[in-house]
Length: 88
Image (cartoon, rainbow, N blue to C red):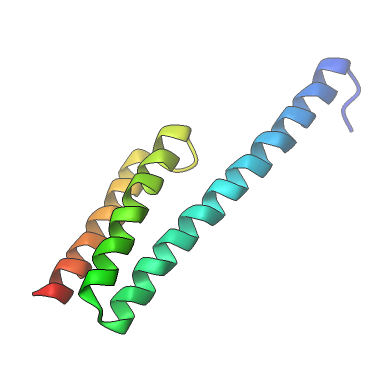
């Protein structure tokens, strides 16, 4: 347990930040899941629309520090290639 006032404040700040990051991570997973489901259904137009919605969310997560920028780029790239293969 934190003893000093500054340590207590730090634990409060960490708890707040963790809650925000958890919500952002959950939001990202929802967007990715929508793209995955659209790919699984085989509908190219829905998959493309879902990818266009998911891409800015992934990049926003990278800028906010929820995930590394290379991780976000990799996820976008892999989803985009799968959507492209679906429409081809």
